[in-house]
Length: 407
Image 1 (cartoon, helix red, strand yellow):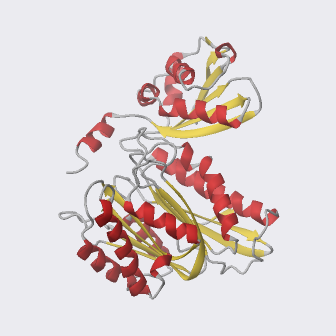
Image 2: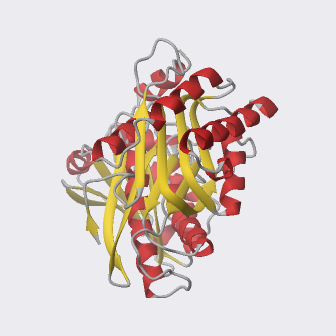
Image 3: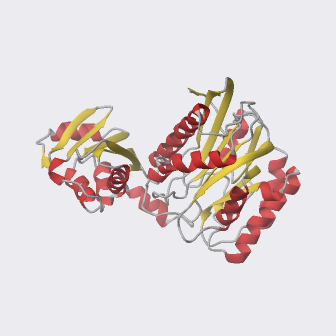
């Protein structure tokens, strides 16, 4: 597998665009994006588990159940959530507008929104934006950058990734873009992820690969403990690479799933590191678990602990907070077998050995925790399973950003 410079336009047959339509008055940011496949593509999706689902999520679930899509339109600024029948009709109408603009079946148009909850989309602005985008879509690198920029809300930077790999002797490419910074919690948060690939793969296997990789990537991210109404990750596979179609869980399927895992892991870490107000990425590894579920529960509990996140921000190796978060997680383990270490590019220090304070060098631990990426590893010595969760520190700026979000 080779990492390349690219985004959603990297695979054969995919085009994109991003522009400012003017969804929120007084702003200057790009706020609408479009992704288009030259041919209908096998499509899979995963969505929020929040009972309150935004209108675009309800529409996209139907599209993904049918299994084919050819275009995606995304807006930032307004989430189109908690908007009832009017909001759903606006999502349907958005798909129809894209269908007319690109001459594609509107039932094969995915719609995504992110931003403030409770407001209706300004449909005149949406229509104008779609008409702007249809004349801008190209397969250039710049087009992918524009699209990735247009889907941002409180993100501090665009998030893209692309890889090349081989399937049945053919070069295959996978590109992606995502957004996410706040209202992020396991089971997906305000994460919008769009993955394109020119691989030829059966739709049911595409859905299986996506669902399984999401569990160990996007669903292991937490910024603030709030699970959003709008989370959406979709993948479109248009088959234009010309590989022998993947129809069974063979070697090519495993290679494809590896690539998808690589892309989703990278994007998940980018979201965690760019948490609202964050100054560092906080990675939590739990090893030595009797089963995968125990490892995941413990890793998530540590990564989501507000007290632990505050300690990470303060460069404070307060291991009691890590052990406390493990203890209330609901997972069963022997606290007197636990070892905990923290590490970064500045070194590694053991904080706990067999459940007891390890008499570590406080200055060394503080120096380690000043790094932009801090890794905590908890070994519970009860088996061979492991899991990783990603989060970030909790800072003053998180409160400031969310106190002023609507204004």
